Amino acid sequence: MNDRAADRILFQLKTRGPQTIGELGAHFSMTGEAARQHLAKLADAGLVEPEDRRQGRGRPRRYWMLTESGHARFPDNHAQLTVELLQSVRELFGDAGLDRLIDKRRVETLNAYKADIGKADSFKDRLERLTAMREREGYMADWSEVDDGSFLLIENHCPICAAAAECQGICRAELELFQDVLGPDCMVERTDHILAGARRCAYRITPR
Image 1: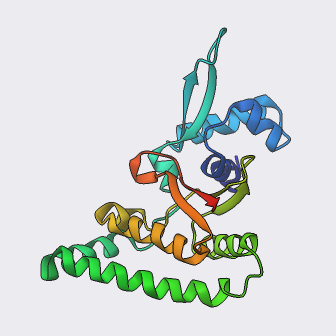
Image 2 (image 1 turned 90 degrees about the horizontal axis):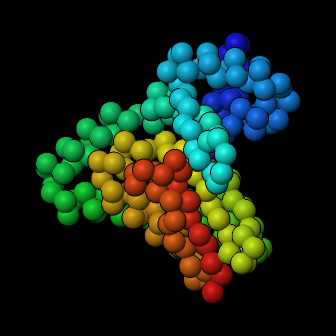
């Protein structure tokens, strides 16, 4: 299996979650047997693993998903250094000092986002610009409109996950950041959270 094919399958599982052999085969226009061989090699490398799920009557369906090593193929930017810096800030200045640092970063990020998003002509344009900025920052971001009129902002990867695990105030600040950027004419709430065990972070955005 060439590296490009492996990366494409890993990217598909990262961004779309667990999938069956049939789903992967259809997406990549390959036979089920070819998809099975690719997954077997990825499993031997410790990057994917199967899970059998029962859905109603009949035999359970086998889904393939990333292992911890598979997720690690999508890097956490400067993870160890960032964690050590956060720990040092807490030791020197306490939790209050760490909160001030996070708030300062949020304000600086907000100003940078608003410099671009402030040019948007509509709410959807603001959401599109925010998603594009998050995508450039490595969050594998996307958005979609839901049938009930709300919107879903999805981040399939967190490039600062180690830092967020060390200091969950970072996640709080990001939720506030999205609300400030998108404006008072909507409500932003987190529905999926990687640190809570979800495979992605997701935010429901409801127009007021």
